[in-house]
Image 1 (cartoon, helix red, strand yellow):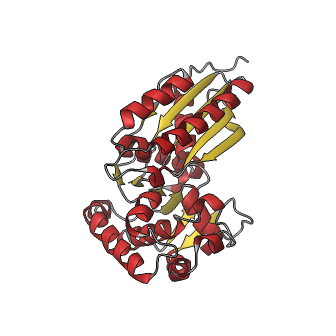
Image 2 (cartoon, rainbow, N blue to C red):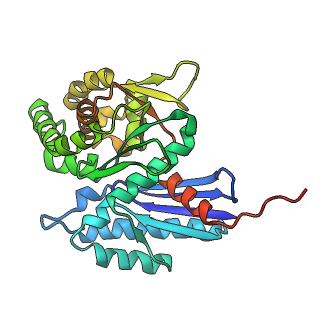
Image 3 (cartoon, rainbow, N blue to C red):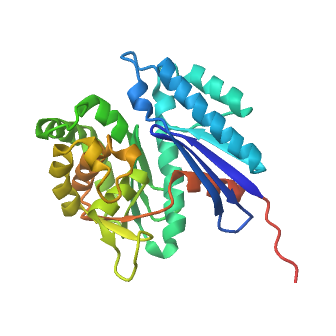
Length: 314
């Protein structure tokens, strides 16, 4: 069957279509993204402005057209932190549900972390042992760890790249003082969370997922030994830290000329790098292995598990 996953996130509205079957690996057929960068549309009261609502409804309308043209059997529509935390979130969600003709599941931060952890576990396999996950989005940073498909500990903190850009790095380029202020805020916010993860013991694999982390890996990382291209990348903390002062000194228009930095990431990539580097420091991560699977794949995998399975006849 053809399944669609629509992720209404803080930076993009992303539609993933895949052919799925019980016990099988999801095979992606279509991936469509609309850039909205919702954090720039938040009012001082924390609501999404009329312009932001129009950007969202236009993006969801385009996604709906793709779904109808591609004969999708079922759609799983989710929303994450931007809608979850907005003052007018319920009203905006109702409008989007009217366009889709079905409910929009609003995931809390811990659910995001758990679904992303499931995707990463499946990608790396059971033999990878204990995994520590870092996943940074536009509105929040998700962390999870454990040896199984369900993490022992999952947490979400409001340190997303878009949210931190609006709050701490509004100028272009932001400069060193703004970066220092964001670093201090991230350390304070992460301190109690890092202590809880430290109590779990050392992971066998430290993994990063999300588009922001993949972009940073293409900028500051390298292919893992024995691999080529971007399928398996590693992002060292020292290399990431060395790039932060350079990113903070150049304007957003110049950042998109750098390897891996796509136009939709130019404004918030500095905040993403600062938050990720700080989180890696506080959780003792020297490097991240980058997973190509993240939240959307986790939603797909959880749905596949719910399908009835009939063993093949001999």
